[in-house]
Image (cartoon, rainbow, N blue to C red; front, side, top):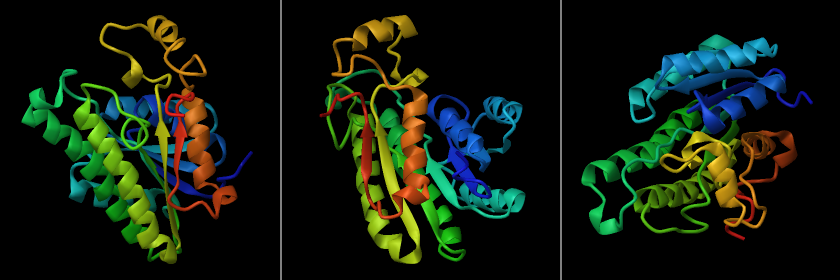
Length: 253
């Protein structure tokens, strides 16, 4: 399929994991993809994979906690490829030891909320500013099944941040649909990405663990999460506004 031929797509957190899979999937369907993140080397790897497969991409370093840099990122995306049609706000962190709420450090709390919530808001702020003046677009925020959909002990900062992303997505969707900007979220569960590995755990260990942890008996492939993102960004989802699509192997069912 070539659903995104002629479109420019911006993906944050695209240097590895789900962000890389999302960028590769858009490029495979004809999009010109701007891959953004904090580490130039990993972004260059993503671009290399896209170009090796015949796609078009450019790497731009940016920290989502820096509003001015995000404004520049949108501007550079437009300059490089002539516009900004779709944005995927995927950058996020899981930081700190697994401890109860009363033992979470202020530094870890602030870092997680700053990146996962404020970073998504700032990215949308600058993406929306361009889209509302240029015919609209589609935004997909990457949230999590941990937060609005289910909770587990000892990761309160992350859970709080992702619940906020889900709520922020719905609020933004209502605020901006009349400007032609469709905003939705995808909430992955454990997936075949580094963030789902526990400390010291191998991919084989994870596969064995999740056999009894979710109804499907396996983690979602990164490509399966990417497929959900591409659907929400596609014309087929033209009437989908403010949805939070869970892709978690049935864990929160």
